[in-house]
Length: 216
Ligand code: C5P
Image 1 (cartoon, rainbow, N blue to C red):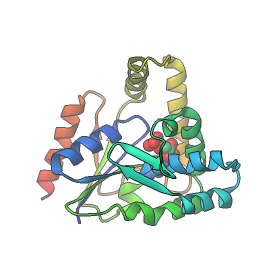
Image 2: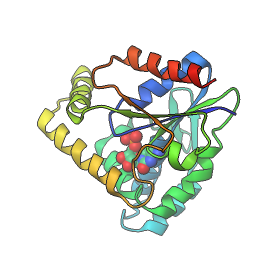
Image 3: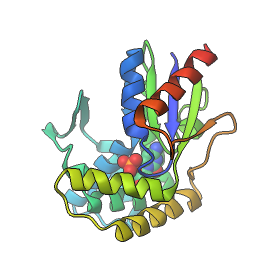
Image 4: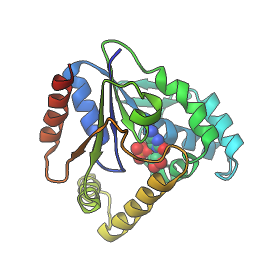
């Protein structure tokens, strides 16, 4: 069962690119970041302290989640908006550093594999979760370009934002994701590094599809 992995730093556009590529090829999608965010939301709701690795891992193991098209459900209720909150993202980024939490989510992620194929986006899709993927993309963009994109997204949604703060938060999260000892953000040896700083979404999608056709 073919898998295309798209890994990369925060706000590199992985999610958007993964969905467009999957739609073109008729493949399923795994947004692995959503699983970490759902774990965070469930743990926050249960008042679990982020320092308590085994309690957070228990929450991850017991997660009752469902992905239904654009809907992300926790215990039957759509929490698509809630998991995008900054507080949930920060908790997720902290507890994603725990081996027990990563282990608890591993098989759940692998279970998304299906015919005719899967596009999986995250940080360690090509290195840990699907090391045998048919195509591995490591999507990067300058931190300034990523902060600009996030800023525009927020403003377009009518949410106030500060570019300097966004840039600082993004640098902090990059550092946390790349320097953690377990599954740090890094390209797999056989990944193709794609820099989207100067590309539109459509150009980036086309570049991935070209790699895919070339790999067939
Ligand atoms: O991609 P997204 O921002 O939704 O992911 C939320 C957090 O989950 C990230 O900050 C990252 O630390 C973590 N994550 C991870 N491994 C993945 C996907 C996300 O550690 N495969």
